[in-house]
Length: 191
Image (cartoon, rainbow, N blue to C red; front, side, top):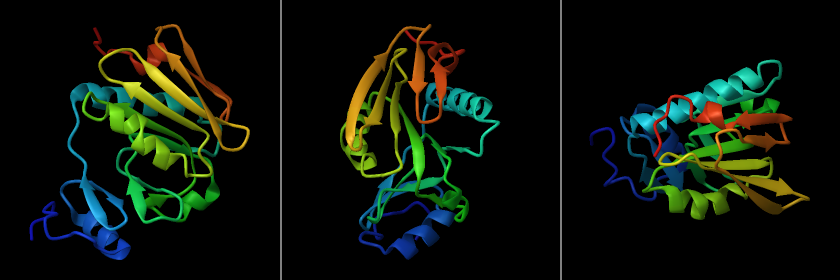
């Protein structure tokens, strides 16, 4: 079987998934034994992710928080469900124990393409909400300057704010920082 060929890998164990993923040519998310191939991305998607990673690294350089981009897995609660968020930030020391999987993200960002936008705002968000450490979830649009920020308030309730102006600052209270919209979309052509 070639790396990346998932046709014969249905209902695999977590251990088999981890071993397979370390040598696979294509990344896969893992949900209760099922592999979900992760397609390649566009240059615009890549540029937005890079901008976000740079912004987070700069704003958090004096902290112990770590920023990860696209190739490190997040485990969703105690289920056998692993995703590759586009960007995430963890400040929990326990996340330094495993080089491949993080379990305590504080912020997750998905850069949504037209084909993933609905999934990122519905099923993926419902799954991410199960992560007890998660305080902010951002969905960043690739077609327009538009960011939706979901923030956990008072335990388990979530509120949503939409940012669409180049001068907006996205308040991430859990980290005590503001993300400037202008920096997220720096050198990105949007309509």
